[in-house]
Image 1: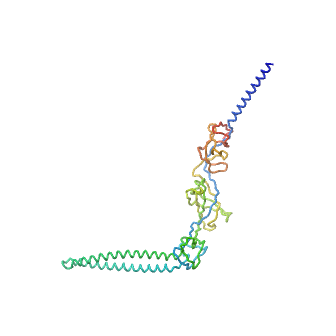
Image 2: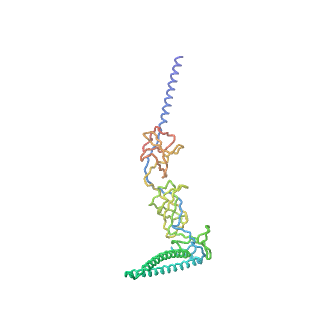
Image 3: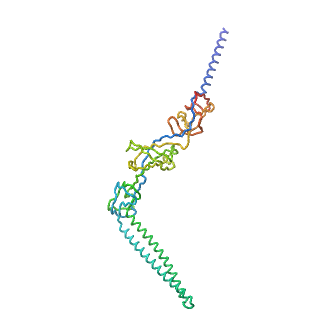
Length: 377
């Protein structure tokens, strides 16, 4: 009986040891992760990015009156094509014309006074020179008379100087009043089309009310500025040699192209975008300023960057990372994501081209865990 009990105990002990060994072996196997891997790629792809845009005129200006007056005559209306310097309206301001006539009279008087002072100077200079010659004969001219002639010449010279100053001031005043008269003719500052007219004949313009509407609004739409708000993520990808393709709802079946024109080169704090403009030559006038556009902009980095499969990037509560296979051990590498290209995503971090990473990243694979690669690259 004792032998039977002893044998059962031995068998039980051997069975327990066998189970413990299998359990330890299973735990050991769980610690080695079987993974599929991929390589870090270096690419410089061109990816079209769809952004909303807006077409603006090449130039646009609100035209106000410089002087206060009544509208005497209108020469254009809404939709009129005008040339630079063309008269748009004539104003009537009698007080401005009266001041101009007064300035003209003052200028004439100043010119006369200047010519008169010059004549006196010439006469006094001749008199003084004759006395100097006569004084060559001893006793022919009294010294007092010679001194008086010299003083008269100096005084006339000073009068000429003062008269010249008065003449310059009168001319400046005349030009000022002449400019005000010129402002009575409202002219176009550039070629374009009148898109707004807010006056009628007889209306008083040039009032100091800050809420007053402009007389005209002039727009040059022979060229258009396609304005885009480029998100910060793509702000370094806008090429100065780039061409964008865009569509407008008014002509849905046609693609238009615009060349890069200019960029602010700065990201706005309020909405984290960079403003960029592309120029479109609107010779046919098919497009209108103010239209919205759907713009496809090619996104190209200035140099090659690193790309990994989207599934390789882990977005954990701790950090965003990929797992590198470092001598068959897992190594968490923090990264920042960039643009997405099909099944790949751009990453920035302590990675190099050709690094071997896990194709399927997971938080369950801890940093430093043993790895066993499933298959070949």
